[in-house]
Image (cartoon, rainbow, N blue to C red; front, side, top):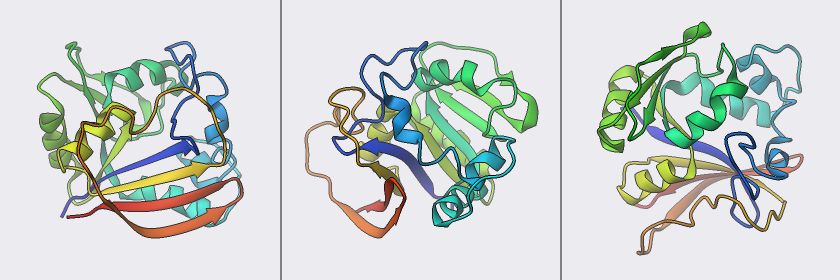
Length: 205
C-alpha cells in the first residue's frame, strides 16, 4: 500500500527556514545551516548528480528516502523558491505535483523530473501522486503548509524530522499554523549522527 511521508530538517525551536525567507533567499537568514549535515553525504550527493561523500547511517537514510519515492507533492511557495537552485536537472527524477492556485503548464526537466501544477487542492494532488507512484511511496517535499494540511486531514502516514541543535529565533515554523486540536505522534525510531538527530514519527491512529 502506498505510504505518504514527509522528510524535513527543523531547528530546535521549530523552524524549517531562517527569518526573511523569500524566492531570492529561500532558506532565510542562516537557514542553510539546517542542511549542513546532509550536503556531504554520499546518499544526498548521488541524487544530485555529484560524486563522493560520507557513507554512514545518515547517508543510508537519504538513500532510503529517495529509493522509496515514486512521486512527490510540494507547495507552490517551495517550487518558486527552489526552481532556480534546482536548475535544469532537479534531484526528484520523477513526477512532482505542485499544489497551487495559479495554473501553469507542466514543466519537463532533464533527469526525469516533471512538475505538474494542480489547482484542485491538496487531496487531488495527493490522489494523482499516488496514482503516479505505482508500487512506491509519495514523498511530501514541503513546505510547512503542505505538511500541516496533510497532518490535519489525517493523510500523512509518516514524518521524519531531522532535528538540528540550532536556535534560529524566527522563520517558517513547521507546525506554527496548525488548526486547533490535539494531535498525537508516535516515535518509532530515533537515530543520531554528527550535528543532527533523526526522529521518525507516525500519527497515532
